[in-house]
Length: 90
Image (cartoon, rainbow, N blue to C red; front, side):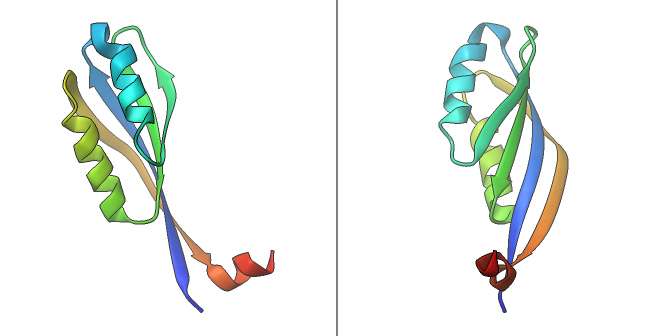
């Protein structure tokens, strides 16, 4: 009986407002990312759904290293443990 994990994380990403659309396109091109909110001041709410903690930190690094991204903050992280046998039975 293997246990699988799903990591759900929420980030606030601050970008230069004049580059908001370009950064949104670059973020949504990354695997397992969704943008759930934005402001004209250049703030984005990004949700990640990943398989492990490593993917969370790797994605944060990728976003933070995009040109015109000022800061990336992790504001929420939850780990769901899924039993693959129970999931197969559904």
